[in-house]
Length: 111
Length: 115
Image (cartoon, rainbow over all chains, first blue to last red; front, side):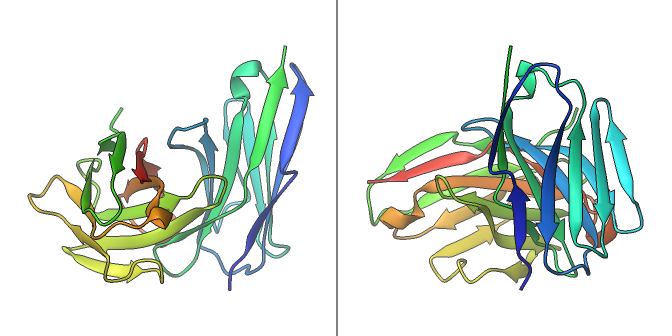
């Protein structure tokens, strides 16, 4: 059974820091991995999708990497801003339609 | 930018009542999903829907739940005889494909409170 874990559970950093969020999954046979952002009481905003054949994806200040063999993905946020404060979720998809979500990392960036 | 829209944003209901949550997926998408998130817990898969039928459902999605695409644009989740533990945020999602190319796009969610 696929399990997805995210470390750390919570992170508080000053504005301007570069930071790394970690996601690990127990079954490496995945099709893709998707990172989401969730603001309190809101929906899920897709940030990056990494297909199984890819190693990384970049969007603006965000860079996500995928190492299927070790069951890990990292989300790198450069030059963090207070507006980046949110919960970040990773989710993997395998041979069925469903996404398996991680526990999330709650990020707070203070001025 | 195309988006998934959900109504209502918040519904309060009495235990035992039926509720219908509505979703309008992105127009050219073919795959539709419902997920839920109980407060403080992980987002959980409920059901996926393609070609007017359920393609997969979780153990949560029992006979109390049903989905329908009544008119080619809306996608609904019906919960019969609601229970206290059905209180959660329900998210609709859609995608153009599945597997290696299937990026899911989520709506803002419908918060269901069962009293």
